[in-house]
Amino acid sequence: MTRYIIIASLFLTNCIYGQHSKITNFEKIIFVTSMCNGLCSSYELQVDSNKKAQLHSVQVYKDIIHYPEIDTNRMGYFKGQVSEPLFDKLLKFIKTLKVDSFSDIEESPLSSQQITIIIYYNKKRKIIKTYSLSKNKPNELISTLFEICEKSELVKTDEKFIIEN
Image (cartoon, rainbow, N blue to C red; front, side, top):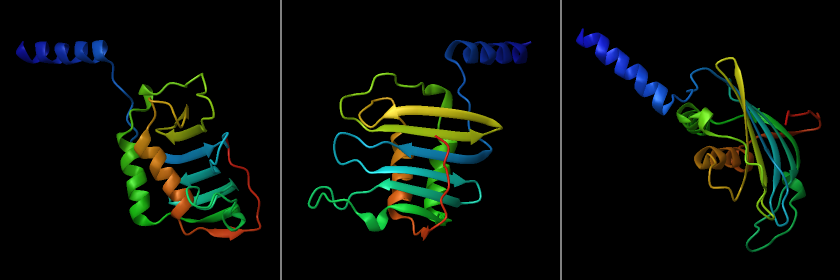
């Protein structure tokens, strides 16, 4: 009888507080950033579960604090593998993400960069649309995705590809 009471109380706790979906079977992630009314670099990135990455660097700036100039060398199409440590870091944030806790932000803060994250997991697809100045956003995940865009050693290619957004 005690076991049934414990099970019932666990069930009711889940009903009251809600249970967020956890990502157990990561398939791929897409990260798209817009330009802003400032010096925001714009990226379109896709990383698959096998560490393959495709990056379209639409507009990239050199050191925006000291030398805000467009960096044409870092713009274009890139392909390659995400390094093991960076991929592990990405997976850590993806697997701890409570995807149901994010809802789209409708209003754009003035001159804020729009960020779209599309995660394919557990045979589902979740879209998170947010802005760089929004409070409810997955900061660690976004930072890691920017790190992949800016620091991965992907190879520039002449092959053009389209990344979903």
